[in-house]
Image (cartoon, rainbow, N blue to C red; front, side, top):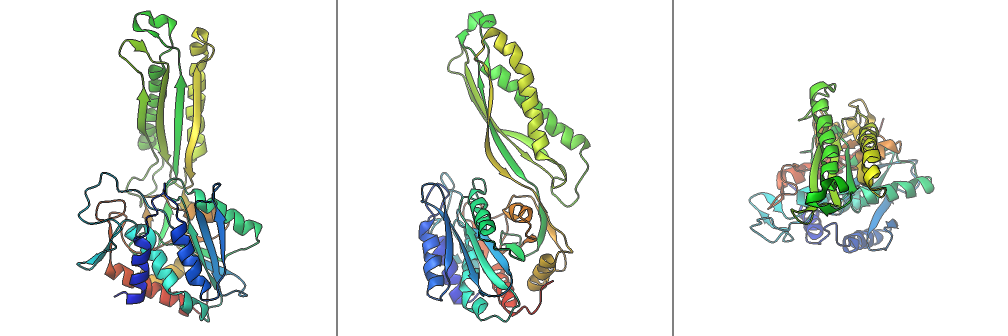
Amino acid sequence: MISSHALELAQTLVRMNTVSHNSNLELIHFIRDHLGQLGVKSRLTYNADKTKANLFATLGEGKPAGVILSGHTDTVPWDGQDWTMDPLSALVKDGNLYGRGSADMKAFIGIAVSHAEQFLASDAPFALHFAFSYDEEVGCFGVKELIADLRDASIRPLACIVGEPTSMVPAIAHKGVYRYKCCVRGKEAHSSLTPQSVNAIEMAARVVGRVRDMAEGFERSEPRFEGFDVPFSTASVGQFHGGIADNVVPRDAEFRYEFRDLPTANAAQMQSEVLAYARSLEPAMQKVAPQTGFSFETICEIPSFLGSKDDAVTRLAQELSGEKGTTLVAFGTEAGLFKNAGIPTVVCGPGSIQQAHQPDEYVSLEQLGRCEAFMQGLARTKAFG
């Protein structure tokens, strides 16, 4: 079972409202001050308006390199969800810790921070780093600034453990998440005069159809990556808006779509195919009205992640978690960004993604106890590699 100290710290973090559209500074400053009382300095990197920050701290200054414990501080909202309790209550009931962010992923952060003193006193041959980011849920924006700061400061960690909910089974791969917005500018007209118009909805629909064709092509012929629930890349359209009235040919339309690419696929090539098809439609549109066409905006680009069961950090996570095997996860994380920065990475944390983002989100105390044992084992580690 989890200790009272670790549980109380996890509860404290869950009670802070860090939904992505809010500031996370209350939580970041709490951790900064907690570490400061132990003599640990924190590096903060901010968003443009200084309302959000990442925190990076090293426990074991002077050791040659360190292992990162990584987590994101933001949560998804709960608007419209049917909760049976206050989402910020951090209620402990029936062997579970409830609350928004309990599984995803404040409990992991709280347990890590609760072991700061043990990490400082550790004889491990490496330092421990805390890396806590903002805006993961809306596109992994914060961690990009954090990683850039590490590069600029010549901080080169040995490895990274991302504590997303994997039921404490080390995960060595996940798909990428690439989302885009397409805006179509047509030319309006009375619906009785369609030859004088460019119907933005119809042009958008052609590109939507191409995205659907691509999805069917992935399912039909892409080489499988066994271990994923869906062992091929996917594409889907999530939103569509356009038109003002039945008898007005619409001037404007907008839709959003995403690719979830296998680690062996090429998301940039997928997007290039969409762009090329849209551009092929523009000459006919612009014969009617030169100002018509397509524009695209990137919403987020979260790279896929592919580690290895043979990586030292994976073996370490297996030893500390007591798990002999590894898994793959369907959801995106910051792991691909750390890996792409040259830092060997594994994903391993308490709880299940099945409970994350749901009403009455929870993580079991049994899982939190396993996570605490993981941290205690990490502090006792004598070798790495």
